[in-house]
Length: 372
Image (cartoon, one colour):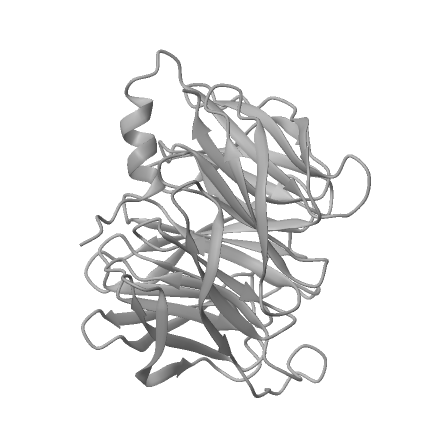
């Protein structure tokens, strides 16, 4: 039986053995051309100070990427080409990346990549292709053969964004027995049985849960208790809370809340969603309103209650992440080419902007790793 381990666990263990609170931060620039790809900065978990990143490694439109739990390899989807996923080796002291190999993603515009809970498989969502794929990770870090491929079909009510399936994310559940895929184009959260022995997928019964028509589900996250799943809807600017049955693999919705103020009249698309490691707060990003929405989570029911809206410090905050201590949030504003840092109040969930925005060209994703 493969041991289930997360990058956060490894970071917490590793961070205990380093003298300083120095973290490597990998950024991806979602463009093509010269000097485009990955850049590297440093982040101080004591002060929240983020350095200006330096160019690290060329890559074609790295979108969403992940670091393997042991911190030795990085995997990304390359979205603005026919559709590939790529593997890199990480030099432990400098953070230097060495390209290992690529594999066809099986569909156009792969936009999201995650690792299963054992760190032995990479799962990719192909937005343009409306499909998802699973790849085995070889012992040397290279991407191996594709172990599963699922093609979604259908459409929904938005005449511009929902004329076909658009798989936007895929993530295994905490037990590593199921894979959940949010499809923006068909307004469904698909659920698949995931076999961690061979990387195969099989539709669950029932095979999906609906969200309201026109919502456009984008990303999802599990509460630390494993009982609740939260889905952010890009088109409707809402978050839906679901009860998760980890035995049957079923989702039952219990609440829908808006990520933007009722008085906001502009165009907004919601993007990222995360739950604090203490399980008390949920955060969501808004592109257009250009904010992070903060919600308190009722610890008995999972229901959300708005705490505040905080300006993102830039334009179009596509992505944000916690540092390993969960005392800080790094927010990537791809519309203004910068990254902002917020201090997190662990008691109230409120955010305080720290320092000045750090210039990063068209940032889509970021990952932190302790300096070893």
